[in-house]
Image (cartoon, rainbow, N blue to C red; front, side, top):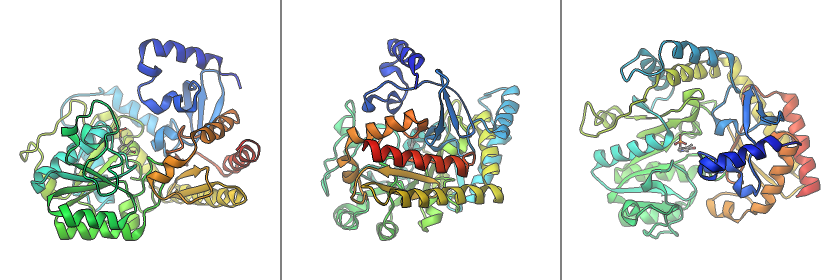
Length: 426
Ligand SMILES: *Cc1c(COP(=O)(O)O)cnc(C)c1O
């Protein structure tokens, strides 16, 4: 595989951009190589500037659920942009997307659109604190909720209140009311609530964590969250930025039967344009300005191009024939891959249309397990697959995705390539 142009482009990029990128995992730094630069994408394929073609399982971190540059989404975006790409004023596109989403996700009665998942979480936290008049936010180790200061916290060891920050520059005062507990650990959660439950404003979680690789939630764990929320009158914030529109039932909350007070959306709902959203119970959402005292605003929020592209994406995705096709394709692929991996010390975890491959013989159910996985092994696995023109999400701790543009033949081929790499190189 020739990647000369990408290598050159990376050197040039590093002159002007820290690490050559605008989001760190893209740099391939942890794979100890330079990244491929993408020229274009169509359907299930990415094309780099050296004209290598890859089958894409990262899909812009799950955004491209219809496949890249879907004809109808392109048309919708062009139509919107021809009429002006931003007005800083109200449009009917926003109402259309809001009406569709509130119809599909019953826990969302009112919704506000913003420009990223990070922004949506940040605003939802402010809202939860205002509504409950409490300070503490409970999150879980390995769950990612964007990069706002108060959520850059990973392993508050066990029940410790003194959470560890995940980034320099985050001051202790910004995270003193954030507590991170182990995911899927019911006892730790109950124990914490026994001590501080009446001070907790909200529990925020990815119902199916996708940012430490796909981890399945223990149903009793989710039930405990619902019970504690009732008992201690704290809010549940479901971060469905990845999982929203990744399930037959639309969201993970509907799939697992958890009812949150607030939900965070992003990624898929902007049809490939910058977007985020938070929504939930009317009574809570009505605290937002201009109705209430919780300030929140955005120059490009509800951007007409993103709204129209998102609307068409969701409509297309939810056509019964498309929905059936995507989930049949995904579940066949996952079970075939699982079967093929059986003889090897490799795990696959999957749910809806997302999956992760973990290079270990042990089950992976929490952040500690993911951290124990070898980076070197993953880098080898990844780079060999890349050479075979398979583009996975470039980290051992990330999710991969299937789109509507993938087909059975290429999925079968992918399984063959995965097995051949594991046999020869892992
Ligand atoms: C991607 C992601 C975010 C952050 O969204 P951005 O648009 O990247 O700011 C938040 N939560 C989850 C679960 C995500 O996957």
